[in-house]
Amino acid sequence: MLENGRSHISVRNLSVSYGKLEVLKNVTVDVPDRQITAIIGPSGCGKTTLLNCFNRLIDLKEGVKVSGSVLVDGADIYNDTSVDPTEIRKKMGLLFQKPFPLPMSIYDNIVYGPRLHGSYSRRDLDQMVEKQLKTVGLWEEVKDRLGSPAVRLSAGQQQRLCLARGLAVEPEAILADEPTSALDPVSTQHIERTFNELKKNYTIVLVTHILRQARRVADYIIFIYMGELIEHGPAEAVLNNPREKRTQAYMKGEIS
Amino acid sequence: MAFNRRRTEENIFKVLMIAATATVISTLFVVFIVVLYRGLPALTWAMVTELPRGGYYLGGGGGILNAIVGSLYLALGGTLIALVLALPVALFLQRDYIRNFKLSRAIRLSLDVLWGVPSIVYGVFGFIIMLYLGMRASLLGGIIVLSLLELPIMIRAMDEVIRMVPAELKEISYAMGATRLETVTRVVCRQAFPGIISAMLLAFGRGIGDAASVLFTAGYTDSLPQSLFDPVASLPLAVFFQIGTPFPLVQERAYASAVILLLIVLTLSLVSRFLTNKYNKYIVR
Ligand SMILES: Nc1ncnc2c1ncn2[C@@H]1O[C@H](COP(=O)(O)OP(=O)(O)OP(=O)(O)O)[C@@H](O)[C@H]1O
Ligand SMILES: [Mg+2]
Image (cartoon, helix red, strand yellow):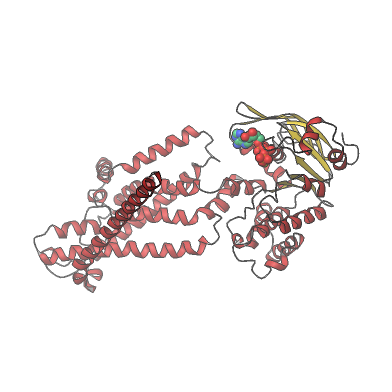
């Protein structure tokens, strides 16, 4: 389906409803491998829902019904019974809108994921912490207080810690749900720059409703409106020459 | 005019709230002061280190070591058993396990009903069961009945703090590939740790201060228990028996026993405060 490059996550006829409310309607789209894909659309259109389908976090929501399929690396994560949700989630690092450190030290936050999936020597863990904190540009700021509570960091630092924590699990993709909306401009820039670095090795899916952010970082755009996939394609094409009327209207700020 | 009415309302309610707060706090202080004033003079070293000697309840020598040790055994044992059962139940009540909202609501409601059951009912219930089994009043019987009394309190208190754990915190853990058990033990219990300790303390306080539930089930004796099957004394009953004598000296000792009971609970509060303070700084708000 993609003109160039491999598809990492393939969504096929995906519909999601909460009780009677149909939130995603028959969505079919591909997320390209090792690029930044931005999911844009007005509030309540189903962006978070779509993102949560990629790692089956949607399973945790109450009264939710999912039909259709999502393929990650070709494996159908909903209909293939041999797929273990915890394995899928391990492949997808998730970043929330609001930074949520775990109730433990900076160090323990980073090693939380790795410790779930294997046992490591103290040296390995130390190296892991240093590596991930350097990736997100937090090492210099916190290297002397790795044992102090993660909640004492500033919001921007916390979000970078959350990213490092996700990376420590060595996922294949990063799912970020409006990760900068609670941050100041400098921290936002930091995160965006890190994403640009990371896309060499990771597929990144970024939910955002800041069009300028999509312009700055996205390679690929998925535009959703009221649960329907309206338009998708390479970023320049969608952002500069949207084909659909509703995309045009959204870009002009006529629908929000 | 309207503005004035609202200001007056504001002031009246402020005064009411201050008055209510002051009443509560001063009542507590009065209770404390009376108990200390009457009890401290009688609180001798012998009181806390010796068993009652012959004629103790007539004003003779000795102390209430039997009741202190007995109460500690009873309350610690009861709290320990309650903890072993309460924590899994409180964790199980989470939406992660019970998806059916009506079921968890029904469980919570029945726990609240149990919380309200007077302790004498537990005592009598325990007594009947023990008669049926041919057991006599014993440390074990008292511990079991106390754990029954403490269970609903502990579960509901833990449940309230566990429910406060942000859903996002759990989602983060799941999103990293954690199982429910891993999420619950490594994230939920950590986040709720101070509350879990408070819940234990609340239940312990209820258990150590209760007289009615141990009256028939643990009995009373002037000696220390040698096994789980011996009867055992307790501080609330020691207070009760001593205050009921016609001798002022023995009555004074009842107050002293109450002071000991207060000190035990106070010490435990301080220890738990110390414990939770160490963890509080990690809590995500
Ligand atoms: N747990 C839930 N139960 C019921 N309805 C829900 C639930 N979560 C989301 N919804 C509904 O699903 C629809 C899509 O929600 P979603 O969170 O995916 O939107 P969104 O595009 O992420 O919005 P925003 O930009 O505001 O974050 C909304 O109408 C919302 O009310
Ligand atoms: Mg959202």
